[in-house]
Image 1 (cartoon, rainbow over the protein chains, first blue to last red):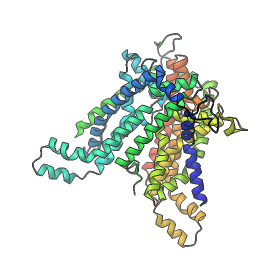
Image 2 (tube, rainbow over the protein chains, first blue to last red):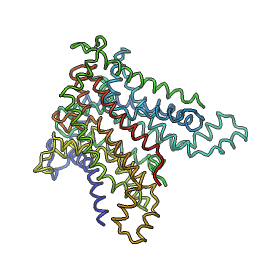
Image 3 (tube, each protein chain N blue to C red):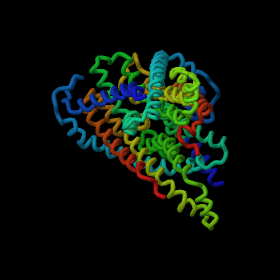
Image 4 (cartoon, rainbow over the protein chains, first blue to last red):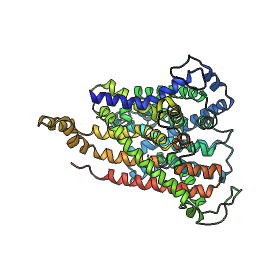
Length: 259
Length: 263
């Protein structure tokens, strides 16, 4: 009983900020009052009509779509190679592939900034997309790898023995069986890229900045709940995606909690 | 099959090139007013070990240690429930609630804490926003999902039969936990703590926004140098210090994880 109360309190601590943000976003006044003085959508209108947010949203959409669509095939290929390739230095390759996860954001961000300057790409989105691909690749490879490991090779051998060409076997047997991992990997890539902040901060300018950077700038300069509105939209999108991932693959499998 | 690795190696090579640039700039001279660095120098690393920046490092280590301890204590009960609940639905919900903040993004989460900590009614009589206490709360909240996942994975590998055996031999629940569950989940505790500590060492948005310029961790120093003073060489040297601390700690985790678990 005490245990349940403790767990409920801890889960409440974890969800408290989210709840507060959603409440604040519907608050009619600029300074949050408890209980709220009424219901208002003015901060949503503000968030959706603020030109810099609109521009940043388009930039985020472009960068995230490009990063996720590039990382999906690259990560899938890597997962197949690591599980099936009989590589001599498999552990080394895995470590290399996961290495962007352990490099501090400011180090990677400054590194990409220096790279962009060296290549004369400070004004383009190229380095931004390249950085995002590197940052989401570990998540894609990891998710797809779970599916590759669970794939029974006899099914592919059966297809081949019935006369299917290797390409046909891949398309009609392997890919459909990998679908949960592919979907999870793609959703992960979208969520991680759309929320990426530290590295992006270093390599964007006012024209190419992505949504989290625009939100950061807004928080530093203004105190009204416009950010609460846009945060609520972000939270809604994220919860939907996490829920979908759970439906498709089961989060327990992705995080190796399955017994 | 091996060729399939090639595209990802290209990505890793680009990432390595970025880090290579970082290392190169760290030993080049800062020319004030110019983004183009001068010749070879070790002055950047000497500047990094000056009193101001060592102060950032000290604050970072203290905050990270406090964050690790508090995160561990707050995460264990949730992880235990996650690993042991018999109900599929409860497990799913706990997992979604645990992971949702993990995926909400640093800015949204940090802004949320500005609202909570900046609300005088909530925190009275202790001021929280723009203090180390406030930053600490934000960091613990930030680290909990990671810690919970690592602990839950470790606890779910502890066979509940051991706990039942201890209980049937007369051990009370507290004793079962202290003498059986806790020691058997120790690998998860150790790796979870080291990972949280290493990640907190390079925390950026939380101290930047919740610290309001009054609390500076290493990453905030790097950002100030790089984006406000345009001192890329100095920032690179400081970033490499952060990188070294983080990778050093994580390699310890790797070595511990590689050891066979105690029977």
